[in-house]
Amino acid sequence: MTTNTTTRGTKRKVALAAGALVLVGVGGTLASGAWFTDQQKMSGNELSAATVVIDPLTTGGATKIEVSNLLPSADSTGGKQGSITIKNSGTAKLLWAADLDPGTPTKAGFLDAVQIEFRQGGDGNWSVPTSLSSAATVLQKGASALDEGSSTTLDYRVSLPSTAANDLQGASVTFDVVVKAIQADAPDSTFDDDTQFPTS
Image (cartoon, rainbow, N blue to C red; front, side, top):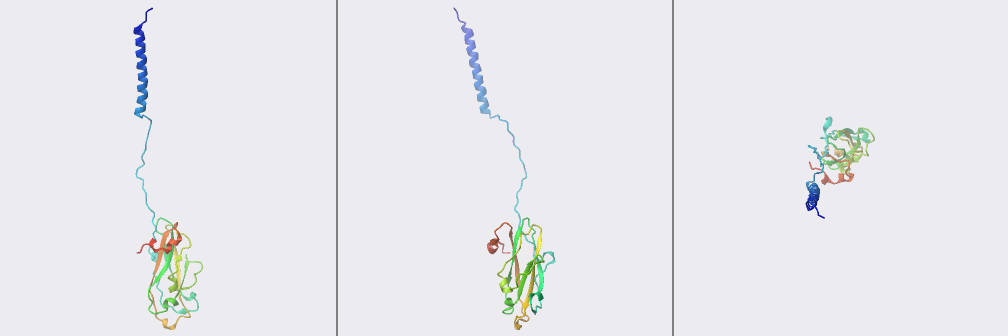
């Protein structure tokens, strides 16, 4: 019996070639990394910090505290009053506090004699009258956070009690009012830390 070696050899070559094609196909797929992909870009994104800014205290027609011709009175209702405007012109809610920085009076005892009291927002009760020398150590704090673009007033009333010494006639003193502001979510205690605030 004779074997057709030519046919058998041809079949073997065809099988080997097919196997090689399969291996090449698999290997080609793994090497090319031809997975479907896509990407998009959003340009012009921008970040900016908020601002905590209060307008000058003379905003809205407010003027400096200039009280003259004080006379002793039976109670503080006989005193002279005015207001300071506090406006948030920044982009974030803020807390504020005000304190006094008095200079040296022309006559000793004048700072202790002059009484000052405050109220916020133009209504409500006045604070307890306090001597100008003591008020310098007491912060007047906003009752609530001041929204961006909003304003409030800090009203003051200055008086001389009937117990003022006669030799204080003609006495005077100059002083600064300093209003500090800090972002509303900061701990309130940071008002007492001057390193948190600018010096000018």
